[in-house]
Amino acid sequence: MNLLSIYKSYYPESGGIQSVIKNISENFIEIGHIAKVICLTDKETINFETINGVEVFRVKDSSFKHLMDYSINFSNFFNDNKYLFDEADIINIHSYHSFFSWQLIRFLDKKGYGSKIVFTPHYEGIGFTPMKRFLHKIYKYIANSSFIIPEKIVCVSNFEKNNLCKSFSISLDKICVIPNGIKYPIPNRSVLKTISRDKIKLLYVGRIEEKKGIQYCLKAIRYFVDVYSLDIEFNIVGSGSFLTNLKDISENYRLNNVHFLGKVTDEELDNLYYNSDIFLLLSESEAYGIVVAESLAHGVITIISKSTALVEFLSENGCIGINYPPNHIELANLIYRLTLEEVVIGPFNKNKICSWNEVSRKYESMYRELINDGNFS
Image (cartoon, rainbow, N blue to C red):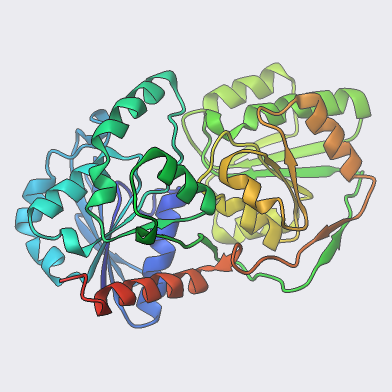
């Protein structure tokens, strides 16, 4: 099978969707398939390279970041590399929230490749700034073709599936739910977690964006230190547009034990998970929440916001919900209560927390079914 995945960016750029494409592509290589990726770049970089067996083609386009990811140069790339689309059995396009995806689906359909397209929208349903909320309302009116043309729509959670069906006219038999995976071993039995009150270690991993709710964590830590006088440390892994704001907030709160670690290696991240007591993800919206699955698999107590797809994790032992937007006093008191008790973590629902190998097999099965049914030409 020849899989061609397309998104606006790819490794070494980090992010949830990049991780999905990277892990599925590399697993496809391991089980004997061909995997290729097309992405955009505004950097003077290599146009083609092979990363862990995956062939990566980067379309140079200096303007796409200023045009909501619309690529001026993609048609030229297509004309020069038409064979990639001819050879592909599957063309899996990712992300509703990138204009590049809508552009591609319409473009490839007009070129006769519509019957090869699978769309994984990672749909959250809202914009996260006033401008993006405004643009999202307009975009919804023109983006319906993103769901009409593809042969299959892959959602990563039931929340995303239900949200899509409310927002667009999509046939239910066109949608399948395949969760995201994790790269860490998944324990098949429960563990008891206790927190040392000598130093309470908190962790966040992901994009540094306002919608992720890290600012609420900082406010809760300030209150926690003032009221309970216990030593607490907060490690923040990742980068993004809200990083400077968070550093200013941390400085204003005089928080000396908040560490902005940026990008870390896989080994460093593994150690951070294992050495943490509580993981925090208080997002306004998530289509799935890979880092929640990762933290639980490491035996870390996980606090999430009761919002969007994250609520589907609340049935997992060790995962605790808090209302959104979080109240900093409620969050601080919850952290303190967790230092007084043992928390059971796991075992986990195998249909919710899966390895990337299992997820890749589900994609492979879905792709094969489409090909064998004769839907793809």
